[in-house]
Length: 316
Image (cartoon, rainbow, N blue to C red):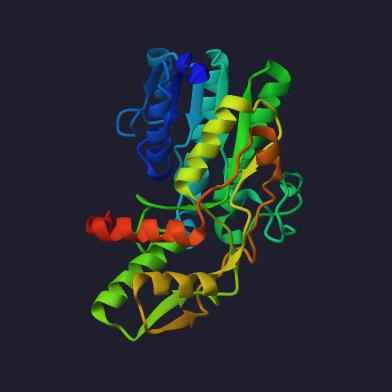
């Protein structure tokens, strides 16, 4: 509490999926002030708006969550936008923060920055040992470039920028549009509808053989705030839950929790994405004491309950 009570905090993307959970926790820490700029008012792709925002709010801590992101389908449909918007927002905001002497800057990266065939579990040292998985490489490279900027600015200017790499997130408030969503909300939407309509079969993307690690969004928010308070080093840090599950096993689990009793059909013409994902989470534990608390099944139950209580989420 003492740390936060002295801080003027600015959070970009504060109304988004991760941002809304982080801001909820942050309010409980009672910072000296909290600025939550909205994209419609402050276009971070325009340098003059970035500079005006920082002059107005005078933050001494920035948490940059704002991003253009989505699942495999969205990455394939708009690779240029995913590259340009993410890199331009981050570069301009970090540089303006450095010039205006912001005390600390927290940059959120992405697991998509890791090479396609990174040895499991992914260690932060492996980040540069290959090219990212092709379907999300433009997004991953744009975000990884911001790690280079953060480290270069620390080296030349003494700017205290840290870089965090969260694994795939899920939880209440996620995006459930089938063309843009990640795998868990897409599966939840399909299986809830199939159970309601008593369908016999649900179609799923890919082969189901790829594996993923998932971090409940409230745990991710807690980890980011812990790093903002206690981590001040140049090395990137993974944020994950420390487990791995195949997409096929995930689909079976989600189907059961949604009450769907039919079969699954796998569309092999759809891409699997990166073959495997699981992070080495030891650095986060040793540097700022972060450990995920929410099991996958518990988190899925909460997410499914939220989705059923918010049917409009399917249209958002």
